[in-house]
Length: 88
Image (cartoon, rainbow, N blue to C red; front, top):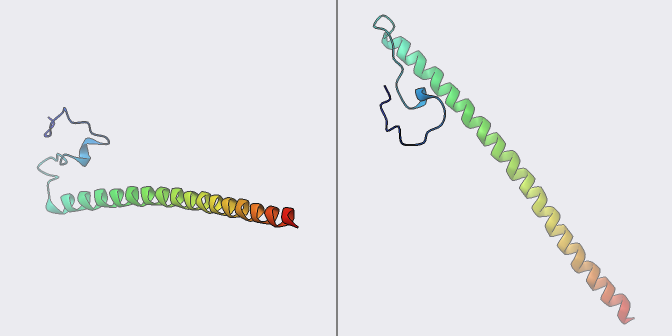
């Protein structure tokens, strides 16, 4: 029943990789178009969800990077101030 190679690892529904089977009465072109539109809409929503998750990960990474930069700058300034104070 599967059209593709079953040895390849795949995830998700088989309907992402294979066409929908329909009865002759249901195979009206408008039904196929509606089914494809629904499928495209679901794929778009899944893509938006993944992009939103990646965006939040990038924001957290950026926050961590700035904290690291500020920490290093603070340590360098503390060393400079300590060396100035110790020389006087």
